[in-house]
Length: 311
Image (cartoon, rainbow, N blue to C red; front, side):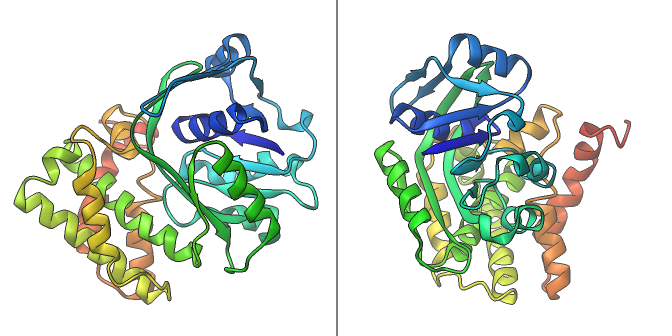
């Protein structure tokens, strides 16, 4: 299977690396020092599941040279998806499928608007990983997991083939009966932990321990659940409790990528997580006071990181 990975950060680097390690033909699309390091020294993955090195690794910055791919794995940040869809176009053939693994719930629609809905799967992942240095991915927490499926819920050969590829790579993988509900259940977790973590500037072990902050986590999840129901998403009745339980099982030092980006003064996924929830709440007529507070509290830092506000 020919697989292009665009966005070779914690997500794309880890899952693309595992697929390459298992024998799939994986081509990494990267830029700058990260690309140079991968081309010269391979892709190094340091992981709690076992370290490995992909060397030599196929890597390029020009998708136009690759031709049509079987699968395009999209690992860029959520706010880069629309722009990235244009970059993916040269790799799309009649049977190409595109699997987004971003945080948030908007990526499939954004990709479909450019590439055609027939090419786009729904997807999500769970992992705590990041670029430690050029050519070096560090996986520090959370059992790596991928869920994928057709957006209309039908069974398909391409989904099954990709499920088997991830399974061969040693990745926990699942094809839920309703991928949209699965994506929203992850959104319950990631928008909540990202927003509360970024506002408090504290790791999960601290924010789940303090009663007032823990209540903030719970209320933020209830708001996402209410917006999901208003949009016709069929979340499981115990989704909020399951996500709270998941937070309780995380290593104490875990932080979300959005939180790390904001703390470091980098552009983040604020608009695709808490901002998206606020927008969808307004459209559905559902109050979202916790996420509204989080979003507007963090917005000045986000705008400064993007060069749109100076202070």
